[in-house]
Amino acid sequence: MPVTLALISTALLAIWWLRRRFVVVTVTGPSMLPTLRHGDSLLVRRTRVDGLRHGAVVVLELPRQVAAPGPGVPDRWSVKRVVGLPGDVTAGIDGAERPVPAGCVAVAGDNAAMSYDSRHVGPVAGDRLLGVVVRRLRSADGEVAPAR
Image (cartoon, rainbow, N blue to C red; front, side):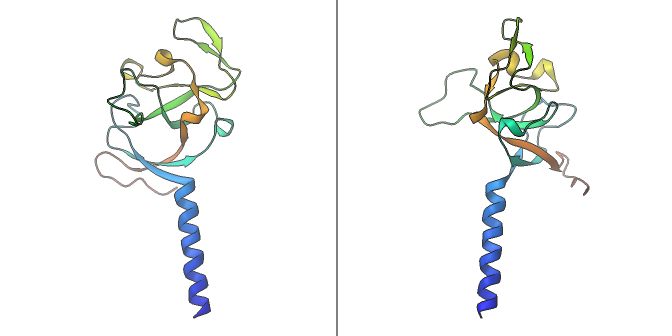
C-alpha cells in the first residue's frame, strides 16, 4: 500500500510539473504561413525573454489593435518569430532603427503581409511572453507530427 501511494504521489507531482512547464496552443490565422497553418497544435515550453534565441517561434500576447470588448478580457495569444532580443537594433513602428529595451522582445510573423507584430506595436514586454514553441504536435490536416 505505501508503494502504491508513493507511485500515485510521484505521478501527480510529475503531472503538476508538466502542466506548469508546458502548454498546448492552437494556431489561429495566417500570420505564420508557410511555417505554421491555422489549426496546427503546438507544444510550448514556458520561458522568459532571457531564454530566447533569434529565430525562435514564440507564443505571446500582443497589445490589441482595437479596444478590448470588456473589462477582464485577456489579449489573444499570438504565434510569432523572434527578430530582436534586448540590445538588438530593429526597425521601430515609425521605421527608425531603435534598440530593443531590456526585458522586451521584437517579433514578426513569417507571413509579413498578414501579420500584426512588432512592426505595428514595437517591442513586446517579457511579461507578455508565454513561451517558446518546442514542436508541432498536430498539423491542421490532422496529421500527427513525427517524433524526433
